[in-house]
Length: 254
Image 1 (cartoon, rainbow, N blue to C red):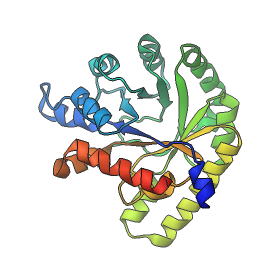
Image 2: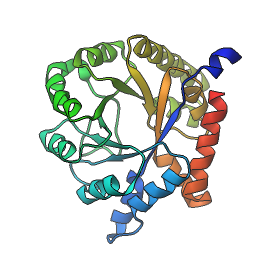
Image 3: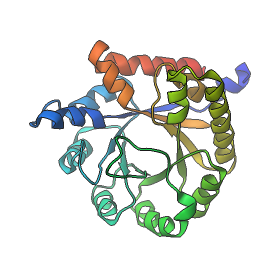
């Protein structure tokens, strides 16, 4: 990318996922640590939005957290959810700025892979319509398979968020050649989605060591980062951890 191209890149947003502050709270019970307080710290440290995933089993974020976040924060809330009638009703009640549809299985530790939009396009088109009508920006969490990008277009979702976790895992494991191959596949998919008129986000597993390639892509408009930042907060504090991620993103963007 040339200097002139970099200077024309659109701003890159940082969404901070505060799920695992709630995980820590729920491990002992009670009210602390408070994920809403974490969201306010993130907001003050440079986050452009807050992400929270209300899972079917309520293993971390709970319904009251969503209501409190909507009331407390002044940046947009990105409400991650499974494509179920229960979650749709909750989203329509709160009307968050954004809704991100993700695959969900009770036995998984974290979100594994992306939605199979290609296999469920007809249902998802009808599922998304009321959310769009309610003013929510709808995104689909997908892998870099071209079929999923095509299906996202058929569904009419204005945004896709690419699952970049495999690349991040390969970097952490020192698998340089495989990581480069995965990054190339992601980069191609990101360009294809952008060229098709879809807004592109990336998320899952991003760390200080893996943020730069995605932040440097002009086609990427938002990064959603959670688990790494909550873990890093143990050692340097949540505000400084987020501020460092923001600095690395901005440096890579140019």
